[in-house]
Each structure stands twice: as structure tokens, then as C-alpha cells.
Image 1 (cartoon, rainbow, N blue to C red):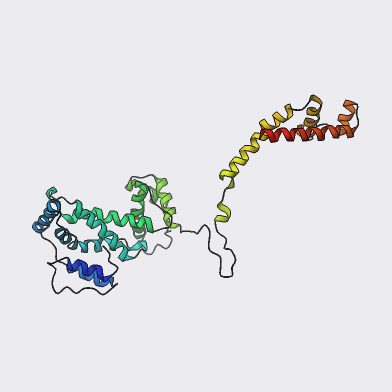
Image 2: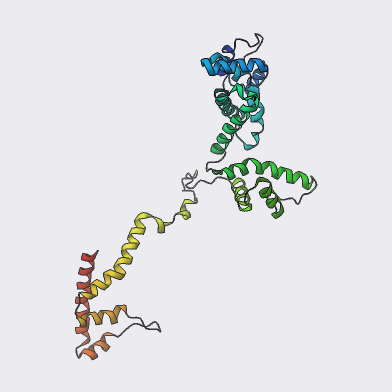
Length: 316
């Protein structure tokens, strides 16, 4: 049920044969005229309401449903005004509330002893709440039941704390004090940590992760430049795991492919680290130990490294 254009209101009036003939249809897109029009629609008596509700339930009488909806449109307007502080268009709030009203009419049972106005109030608020939660911020601020409860109560409670502090109290902060956090948590029966988290979410604004380029063509700096964590990127994690495997099992397998002399030379030259941070034996130390020249030790080392490289490639 759209309220942003006059055509929808015209349709509502045409579907309402009991509406006053003096009802002036609003101009296209005029929200004030729509509100004025629905406030002039007649209210239903208890008897009429139950009669129409029974016709809808037993005969699926759409004309009866239309009368039930039309007579309660003013209720939607009244409820929607309470949510104007979230910065969303009033027409959109009314439109979502109308959807809730129609859901309530569809499910209403006149034999339960409850007036439609009381039953529909829950459905109207539920639809408006859902709309606000989806559109108030680009990122959802409330997903759990406790968070939703906090979202729709914290703002009004903070205003109450400010009023209690007095208009002349210039030192009263926008953030809640420790005592106020405890009071909110106690009154709403939620954890104080949840109160602090929701206050942070509501006070913070949306930030584009990847801003558009500036007017001069320069790429704007945004959080995307420093929020990326390559450590948890799948490809990087696989590569890191492969490096770890090669550095442990792979090196061990490659060393096993060498003869004893070649292995000791490689270990002394590349793998051994003393307590003082120094490495193992030098080429000359190894040459003296094996009774060969330093050049020969170097040649053995080069050959051993090539053999290890081949073994590592096969292992990977």
C-alpha cells in the first residue's frame, strides 16, 4: 500500500463505499494531504469491526478487509511519527506500517475479545522496526533480540537521562556514564557489555571501505587500504602451509638424500646456529678436517645443494 503518491489514496477511497462523499483526494505526492485524508476516514464501531472481520475470515470478503484497513490508517500515521528521529522518510515509515496493518487484518480473530487497534499495533511496529533496522545504516546494527530491544529503547532512555540531569547541566556528555549503563542494563534485563556495544554502534557512522576517486582523479584513501589481512587470505594460507612443510619435512627428506660428508657440510654451512648467534664451520675449517682444499669443499657444497633442490621439487 503505497502512500507516496496520490493515486494509491484514490484507490483506497474508491474501494471504500462508505467513505464520506466530501473527502478531498490528495494531490500527487502530497504526504500532508494523505494524512489529512486518512484522518477523515470514519472509524468503525465494535459491532461493525466484528462483522467485517467475520466476513473476511469466513468468506474472504476483500471489501470487508478494505474497510478494516482504511479505518485504521490513522493509527499507522500516529505510530510512524514516533520513529521520525531515525532520519528516514515519513512516507516510507507509513508505507511499511500499512503493510503491518494489512498483515494484522489478515490474521485478526474477532472472537478473541480484542479490538483490532490493539492487535494491529504489534504488527505495525514490527514492520516499521524491520524497515528501520534494514535501512538506518548500511551495516546492520541490531540482529539479535537483545540488540533490537536495545536499539529501540536506548535513544529514548538517553534523552531521559539528559532531562534528569537538567537543561543547565552543560557537562552532561552524549555518552552514558557507568551508572547510566548499569541502569539501562538493569531496566532492559540485558548485559552491560551489550549496552556499551550498542551505544558504540549507534554513535558511529558508516564509512566506505573503498571510497570513490576524488575530483582530481586521485584515489581516495579508505579503510580497505589497511583493513585487508593477507594472513587469512586462502591462497596466502596455502602458500604459508606449503612453506612450513618444505621447511620441516621437505628439508629433512632432502638431507636424507645426501651422503654423510655432503650432509655435514650443508648442515655446518647453512643450518647450524651457535648459542652466540654465529654459524657453523667455515670452508677452511671443513677443508682442514677432511684434508682437502677449501675449493673442493665449496664444490661438494654446490653439488649437495643441487641434489637437495631436486629432492625438494619432487617432495613438493
